[in-house]
Amino acid sequence: MLFDTDILIWVEKGNTKAAGLIEETPECFVSVQTYMELLQGAGSRKRIQTIKDFVARNGFRVLPLTESIGHRALIYVEEYAPLSGIRAGDAIIAATAIENNLMLATGNRKHFESIPDLKFRWFLHG
Image (cartoon, rainbow, N blue to C red; front, side, top):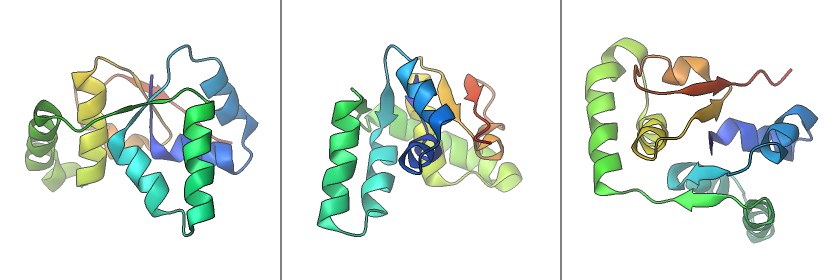
């Protein structure tokens, strides 16, 4: 399963439901986009190391941005941004899930629901 950035942020904030979802998932992946979003929001070298440790400790595999993922993400932005407002980062995450035949775990339904081929595990963090 590919995890969206929001799920990892909820785990960091102590959400046991989000942590349980990760624990019960046999293979955990994140897009390099998600990894960069987490690092970008870190604010300090110490927090960057904490994030890197979390990703490693939980066995996440970081999936790279490939040419086919980039191409697919471009198509999503071109096709769906005018109607749904999908942003480039979310298009890359969605394309990563589809290109790797993975379900996307996210709580951000409105960011992704316009993409017809994407398989979801909607997560309600409450």
